[in-house]
Structures are given as structure tokens and as C-alpha cells.
Picture: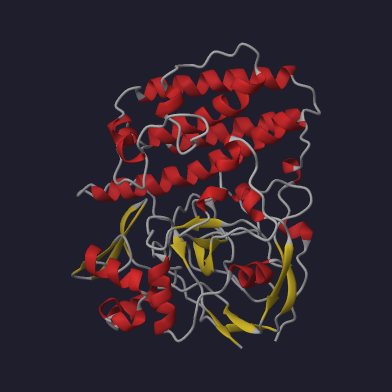
Length: 438
């Protein structure tokens, strides 16, 4: 058994240039880099690709480009630039996502009907916002904490939408019967897999949550104590090969394995395998951002819902870890792995031995479902004003995921980061690892 250790603050801390108060030149450089990276993500897409919406949960790439600019215009420029005139008055409602305090918003499920403004108009909107933000940087004092805090929030918000661009585009291209690729490059090479094993922890009282310097979303704090019973956690995430055994054992046909909500989804939505899996004469294939490919049995499973992860865990006579268990064991692991910058855009098989404490792929590859409902930490308080709508109002009917994925920007993630989605959601790069009581 391994003893619980206090979080190493240097592991969880964001990179040094995330510190607040910001040096405005450093913040300006980070802002420009993130904005540029977002536009690079849509370069492989046609204007038609950017305008389409494949389902109500997804948004067109053009909408993501506009909404992230709307965020800076609404919360930074309109507030801190005297006499600022919005790029277009209609955009205030058209590209508002869920900020009711700001005003009206266009229905999410109809975003694919916004044929105008054109993609070029939206790119002009982005340039307009960037010019005014750059001018604000030049005219602001270096100690302007309020401006730098809101810009940093907007930068992290845009990084979230970078990930959503890729997951939404993947679902869109999969809906096309031609199964076109986003990028024609397959990153995987055959590799010998490593067998997963159990790593034990003694439990006890530990601290979780963010504190100190470095950016974090409000839902990551306050830091607080948790009591953990002794437990074991798998050294690796569940793989495609592992999950294939569940499918072949008629896992999707056995109601005793499923939560009621999950079994309802199996029946109503016809789930028989993870999202994007297709059975061909030569076996199972899956759709990737590089096109259709045979499933690699050694890569972490992805595009499974909480309900599917829970059913698999019950089949395997195990359970999902709590988010507190996950954070404590991840606190001594480096924040490194297969992120968006690798350009693999797909989970990869483990190639090296896992670092201490013997847990592999905690960060990157796939977001890992936990059994924890998304709820406020003790002492959590929602921020005032419209920005307070960012996280707190969603703390209902969602489950927490940890660790980031192969399409998450590496600078965006940390050990305390709490992602959350409804239990039926499958279009994110979501996977899981197992845990059990010791």
C-alpha cells in the first residue's frame, strides 16, 4: 500500500506565465498565441464545414470562433474601453452562449442555421476584437489585476472551445457518409501493450482543490480536506481491447450491468458499442479525426458515456474512482502526456514505463470519468455578475471527469481541473480507469 501524500504544489501549479497579477506583455503574448491557435484549428476546414451543426450538443466551428471573440468583447472591451462600439449590435445575442445576465441569446440547437454572418465576417470580427484588446494592453497599467484576470479567464475559455471545435468537427465529419478525415495523417504504429495492474493507497485525510498562485476556475476550490478509505486504482486507463471484451460478452444486452438511465439509453438510442465504432467484415473500426481506422486494442478507450463506464466497471467487478481519489493519486504525477500539441488527435498506447507512483496516462489521451457528481466544494461561492454563470449553475445532473485529453491544450490542464458532462454524453474524448476498495 502507498501512503497518501500531500499535493506537491509545483506539480499542480500552472506554468509560471499564468501567475496573477500578470505582466501585461506576457499576457498579451499568451492571448495572441491562443487566438492564433484557434484559427489554425479551422484551417483544414471549408467554409461549409465551419457552418454546419451535427446535433444540438455540438456547435458549428464558425460559432466557436465568434463566441470566443464575443467573450472578450462583452466582458473586457465593453467594460474597460471608454466609448467602445461593438463590431455588430446583433452579435450580442447571436453569439451569447448561456449568460442570461448579459441578455437574450440565440437557441443553441439552431446555431447551424446561422448562415450569416459568413466565415469571413466572423474572422473580421476576431481581428476587430484582437486589435482593440492589443490597444487596451498598451494603454493599461502593468498592475491592472481586474483586466488581466478577465483576459486570463477569456484565454482559458478559448482553450476550452479549441477542444470543442475538434470534438464537434469530429462528430460532424462522422455524420457524413463518406467519413472524411479532418487531417490525412494516421499517428498510430503497432506497439506491444502493457498489462494493467492495481496500485494500492492507504487512504486517510488528504487535501484536494486549488490554492495559491496560478490560474484556476472557481469550481476548483476552495481547497479542503477529504477522508479516503484504503483503495486500489488501475495503473492504466481501460483500453479498446478491454472494452471489446465487454462488447463481445454481450455487455450491451445485459440490463443487470446498467444504471436505469444507461439502460434506457441503450434501448432508446440503440447503443451496441462506443460512439464511432462500426463493425466491418475484418472486425471493428472506429472513426477518428484521421478517418476510419481499425481499433487498436492497446489505446485507451474513448467516446464512452458515464453510463457505459459504470456498466463496464460493474462487469469487471470494480468501480470508478472518486474525483478525490483521482486527484490525490495524480498529485505526484507530472502534467505531461498526449495533448493537442502532439497533433495525434487520438489516444495513444503507452510506450514508456509509468512514472511514480506507477500510474500511467493520468494526463492527456482521454478525460477520465469519476463516480463523483459535479457539485460545489465546501465553502464554494459563485462570483458576482454575469461571469458567475460560468460554472456554478451547472452543478446538477453532471459527473466529473479528470486529466484532459488528446485534444486538450497542455497549458490548460492541471491536477485540480474539474471537467463535467451529463452521464449520457459520448462525443467528448472520454474514457476511464478502474478502482476498487482495498
